[in-house]
Image (cartoon, rainbow, N blue to C red):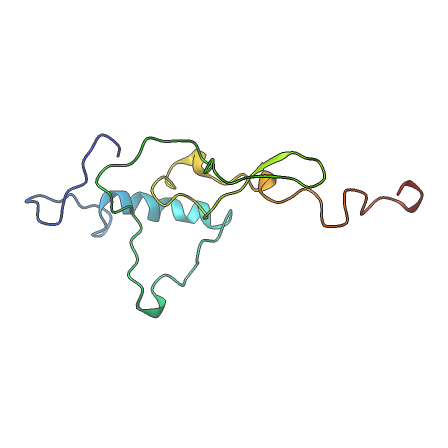
Length: 126
């Protein structure tokens, strides 16, 4: 997928597989069943509101892989002062067919609520 330049619409030969989807899209369609229970990305709403929707990236060549999380959105947990990585979107659209692009749901949500870490402790310990 990386060294291979994506064929343009006006090329002579375009590779197809899986019922007329271009092969990168077919890979996503195949893996989508696996991703759905992890994070339901816009399930069933893709074609609403006359939205043109492509499952594969439109760029010719993908950028070098920087890791499964966008590095710019690092957020510090209020109570434990621990750095938590947030995703900006569900996945990076280009890289989401790879296994290690799966979201780390544990690190994504803040560890404690607004009232602090002692929220659910027994009464004597608060």
